[in-house]
Image (cartoon, rainbow, N blue to C red; front, side, top):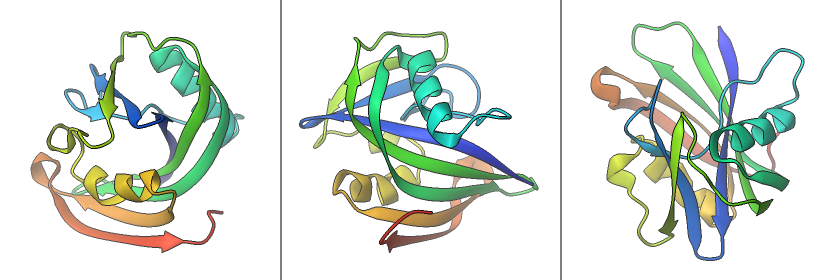
Length: 155
């Protein structure tokens, strides 16, 4: 079964805001902000809600940059992640029970403390390129297979 999720990367100038995940899937890793799309909610509304809940900032303009599918060995469910970028948001990032935010220089992104797939697609997002892809993980969240393609538009 495919379940829809959101992920939003917040970028200001030469910096990116990441959150240290404190609980749940991905705990102990730096990541963007997002989560499950609730029943009756649009993907765009979910992006904005999740960013606000996790880091306390309000996104004004968001741009969909990609769609990635994540699957895990031994699990039937597929995570369909709608990847967004926002450079237009207001509010001071603040820690929540789920995430501890921190600004990073775009040349000092802590890829070794993030999901292994991020190093493949995040540079495309930062370069303004759209993409689609699939990542299949095994033990210790190691990538077993992946496919990533640039796209003209995301549907």
